[in-house]
Length: 244
Image (cartoon, rainbow, N blue to C red; front, side, top):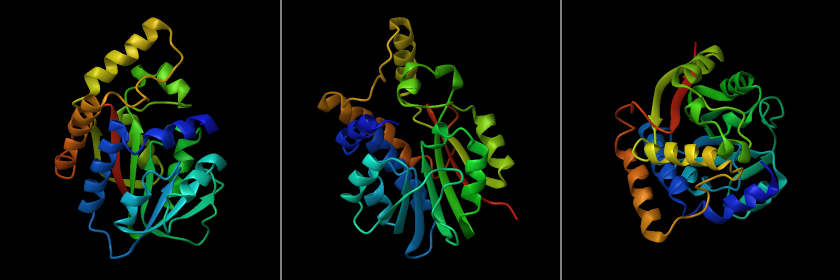
């Protein structure tokens, strides 16, 4: 993404329903993994550091981000997180390091060589380590919103599972998420197409009551996803480990 997009992200990610709801879900999923005390956690494509406070609840955080503007912003938010320059799949400054949890939150869709990126993640997992990965779902939705955010693709469930397995990762959990609000998102994306807009819809914070409602609806999946897989949604989330 361009520097301007990261500045926009930094301005909204603390309060916007999508970021806030996703953090609730990710926190619940990480909590269900029963990581070791002071787990070694890596976030790849950490953006402006909006997830650092969440991840720091579970261990010591290392981060990699390719964009200089995003790195500088994240350093003001990171607490003790170490933020390095790097890029998937090959430019990672982590040789010899292993992690109990590797996080890739809506990053893989930006990477041309996605299978190679997943293989790189496999190589960073400590024995017994897991990776937590989210991606946008439904290629049929690909449109102005994705183009504005520099997405290369969206994934079907089968495609995502196949990429994970081809990279030598064992799928422990694979589910849709953001189910309740998916119909609204579908409608918004089709409206974008009809209007011919090139702007990313839904990136600004809606009015307070609406933002709170959407946060609650999306975030409520935090109570479900550690226990069950959802059959439909706007995104996909996977927990994976290295195969033997």
